[in-house]
Image 1 (cartoon, helix red, strand yellow):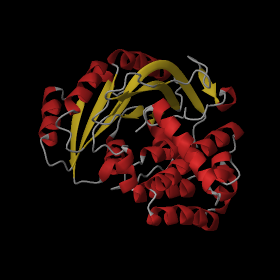
Image 2 (tube, one colour):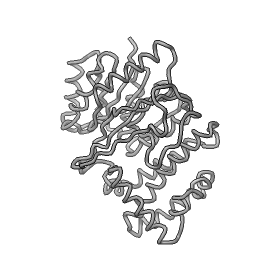
Image 3 (cartoon, rainbow, N blue to C red):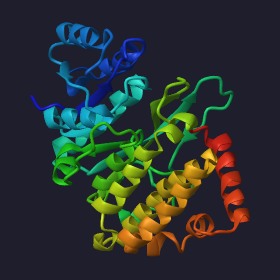
Length: 339
């Protein structure tokens, strides 16, 4: 029996929270394949994964590998996936079980009618510890609901409302055909996971329901600002790979090309802002050299990005421009609560 949905759960030293994640996925029943990828954990993660496989042998598969980082765990899950569609759920996050069932009903319809779409989009919430107002990321302003869409049907995404890994379910074969290959031992590869295959997406479907709960609150979490600054080399590596792996000029659909450019602008802006937020002489020099390198090695991307609002601001030698960019970043933090 071919599963409707393969869910890869990258697990590294996840013993304290992975059970909650898995329990929210189990209501999907036999339509779901849960791939628990133990990425060389040093705690009880491997034993917990084996326990779930023993208890639910037709639903859960425990996969053990030497540590390869988040990207390596996602790629291992993709290589093992047998479902028609593919989703990544991080082990400290969780999903809404009822929305999962609704999405499976939709995927089953695609299968029965032999009309699979390339990407299914749903809403997610920034489930930030201690936050009184938890930001829900919804897309009805850009995506008509409950019908198959082409890019001509897609409206404008406001700044900050982009499709993240938490938002998307990809058709498995599209991921395989896209040539996606996430770098190992590198954080922030979720940007590549969304960006590279999306250049191949022709059809999509939007379900305006909160499916994914994106947990923010652990001190060691990769999206904490201090951690991101400490790992800025990995953020920059992902940014460069985005330049390398998608030639925007080869994306024929103009709306899709515009969306990808907007997404790339956001990631590039975050890279620059983190270097400015650090404020050390080393990081300030690195921010300058990052744009110089872009102009030298990726001139097409530089020409596009440097003409846009944040490109003009961040690429300006004027301190006032950079101060303005930092204020916008701080405001965005308060609104969206993303780190």
